[in-house]
Image (tube, rainbow, N blue to C red; front, top):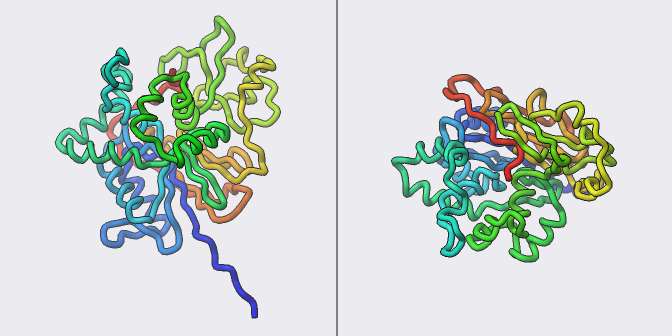
Length: 336
């Protein structure tokens, strides 16, 4: 008698939504999710949201309700994005003696990034407070049998140490407060996992992006293999000027870089404002953020139990103009 092993559950990893609720509904329905008792679900698959549900877009409140309902009813999982983390810091008062009023400073740039979210919840303050509490329950990372998910960067050393200290994959209010010190362990965890890794440019050099911000850091790949120059590791919407991109990496810079061997399970990230046709970055690394809120694509990867990622497993819907009525400037590539 032959015993057939039951097929494992499939997962649909979905990129940064940023308030594009109508587009999310179109993507879910395209993938076979249907509303049952008001909750989108699939008979054989589970959605995995890569974070950044809030900010910038026109239907943030609707997107949050849709996603939280799916998570609460078991038809989805989620990892925290830097925008959910930023919202917690922006709305949390600093402790006495810290020298600040809020964990995340209320300055012009930070005000702009969260403005749409706070405006759309202006008449629903109790709901917003409930969502802030819910953000604490969102894992920083997921490790399933066949894949991993994190918003920006899989840093194995930080993740292992975090699990030892926190006893799991979630932060609490004490960790949030500790993370406001960027050079602390908590600060490093939130910066690397939710914003990505970076390198400082050599003394005296800087780059100005399309958003007008001048930076002395550039964002790097956490999966680069044997890189030789800056061009081999840069990973951000704004390219490096040619004269900087051709610079050889120093021995010290190479030591700062992470790697993600092909022997590791596939890992999915969002965050990076990709464009073009969705495809893996490497056989076991995929970014699924394709700039939905900038009239790009809302993308999902239909993950089963493969070890090598395939371009054919990406699905997407284009964001139609009626979804959005404002062009939202991108966040600066490296936050410091």
